[in-house]
Image (cartoon, rainbow, N blue to C red; front, side, top):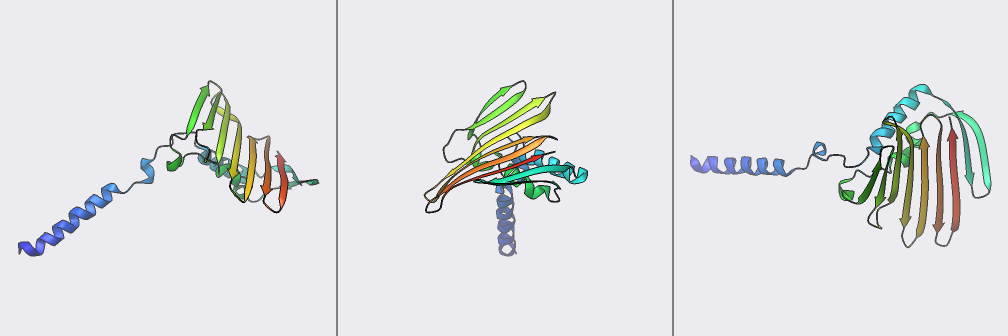
Length: 176
């Protein structure tokens, strides 16, 4: 009878041990400003208010402007949410400079895409977010400057230098 119970007991112990080793999402504390959470809130708010946006887009020397209502704020602000630095692999990857009205995160390692994240606040409310992203590999170099001013303006400036194709400049600006 003991031989029958022994494999069952061992299986329960192993399963319990594996469950204890499993890293949970809730156990990862946000070490830095919750950029993804902030923009998730902004996406929800802008989706409800549907502001008219004066949007201009330029590619190299060609530009267009028009006033529109953006139906998909999640896609519109995807570069901002994608610049969140709260990733387990990036833990302790940024220096933090904090003043009463701002927080600046600077990358400590050259391989980190988000090079700098600056958040300005007034009365504990975000007034500006500026992000500098850089990607460099053998195929291309890319630099992005993202700026967001709640209820006022967002801009995305991108410069790409792609091997065999050349340099491209993009700029998107939306004024609320």
